[in-house]
Image 1 (tube, rainbow, N blue to C red):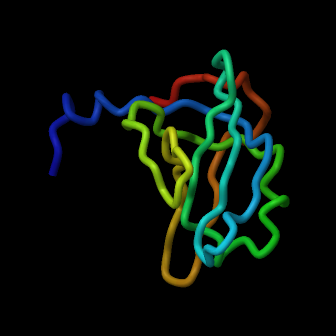
Image 2 (image 1 turned 30 degrees about the vertical axis):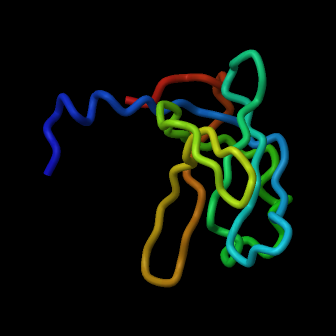
Length: 108
């Protein structure tokens, strides 16, 4: 369990996937460029390639992104956040708003 105050520290914003491609020599990683309404898009790596054989189907989707994580280097690429997904037995899927909203919108 975490406290409500700990949960409030999580900064989650809606981003729009601008590009999605497999990371060379990796069976698991997809490299995203995501618009969060900031000066420049963020590069985020995600280990979901087994669920998306063609990652380009994700381009244009709006997704929640945990934005206040420290940058992490994975296979030589900086990852500047974490995309949130719904995960269950045998599936993983993106989640997002039911209609287009401004990028950078806070999720509470």
